[in-house]
Image (cartoon, rainbow, N blue to C red; front, side, top):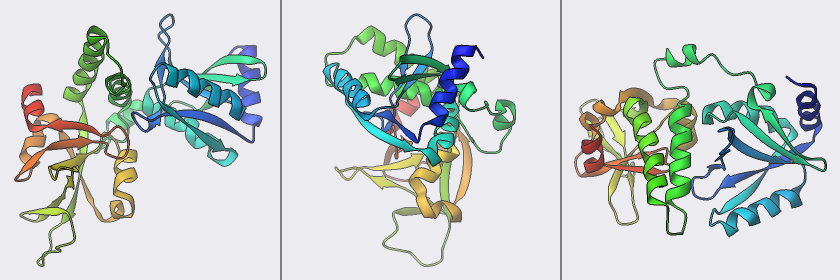
Length: 263
């Protein structure tokens, strides 16, 4: 770590809190790729006004965002979460200007080999990052650069194909709970969600944090199945239109037809 970087890290860590930008298109931190260094960046501001000005600039580019304040006691957790997004650099703005801080200088990178060896996906950083980039561009209310969008989609698809996913299931019951949106499949019950149009989709998750985020208190009593993309069709319930990846954040729909084409 350089001397200048050490100084910036200490300034950031001494703050009582900071402001960051979430994308309204993904419900995840706004991420950008530096076209010169290819760093994957998130943005942090010491002052509220500077963060609001940055969001205004994004909105002029049809990239709607929202400001989120991270208080002192949540700063360490926020820095830890950057590794799950595959973000390697923080763009820190204060009265002195911008400082680039390596994410590993704020939080040690976890042992990825140990994470990969887990029985369920604890983290899926490359897939998460490519989904963010693709959906930040796809959902912009503009005429998009088709070639660029295709490149982002191809990167995301490559990660979809090689990833594992969590499917949360419930233990089967003898009596039918009419209020529960779940389908009995022998001795397990597979939850589903309905679109505004009444179409059925099944929630799946790229990692443990996304599963807990959506399942909430039910997560403690649910069983987690570790499935590859190839295994997903075996668990598709009758009348389901497909799956929704990370419904509490990126909410990426994967229809049955799209899944067949990928496979």
